[in-house]
Amino acid sequence: MTRFLLDTGIAGLYLSQTRGVFERAQAEIARGNRIGIAGPVLGELAFRAEGIPQRERNLLKLQRAFDVWKLWLPEANAFYEYGRIAFALKAAGRPIGQNDIMIAAIALTVGDGRHDG
Image (cartoon, rainbow, N blue to C red; front, side, top):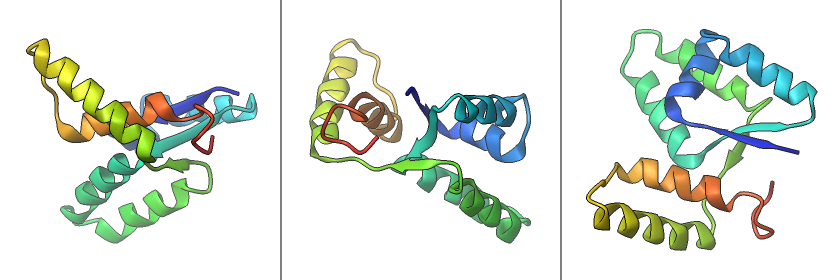
C-alpha cells in the first residue's frame, strides 16, 4: 500500500475537483492505496474556508473528504524529524514555513512502524 499525503494546494484541488486531482485520488484508492492529509493541512484548509462567503459549503466539503481521507497527526517521532529538517534547511540557507516543515516531518514518519498508516 502506498500512502499519498496531500499538501494544502493539492488538497484544495481535490476539494474543488479540478485539475484531475480528485480522479487521480479515486484511482489510487481503487488500487488499495491511502489518501490523506497532515494535521497542519487541515488547519490551513479550515482557515481558507473561514474567509470566504461560501464558508459553510466549503467546511462541509472538507468534512465530507474525511469519508476518503486519512488524517495523519504528528507523533513524537515527527517532532524530532521536524527539528532535523528545520536545522538542515536553515544550515543550507533555505528555510521554509513551519507548517510545511511539519507536513514534511509527518510525511516522513507515516508508516515507520510507530505511526498508524
